[in-house]
Length: 95
Image (cartoon, rainbow, N blue to C red; front, side, top):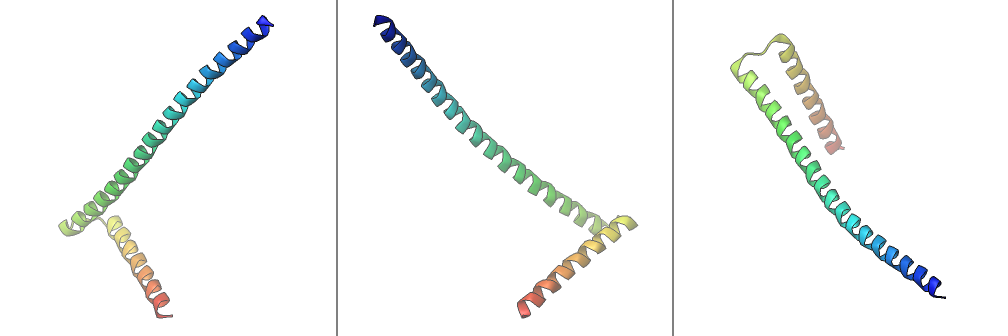
């Protein structure tokens, strides 16, 4: 009978230890998820900054007149796509 009690106590101790480990891991998991979300937000902000800087670079190239033919064609294509998108939006609004 004593041996059974000893085994039950041992199992209870191990269970308590497992619960403590679980709680510790759960807290660490939550912290890591928060860190991941912060990292993803920073990446998103950096992508927006990169896109803004690219646009500013293109504007500076246009203003300085230092565009080569390939850049001019690329800007023309982009402007044409914007015009098409605007036309599409206007047609949708007029329906």
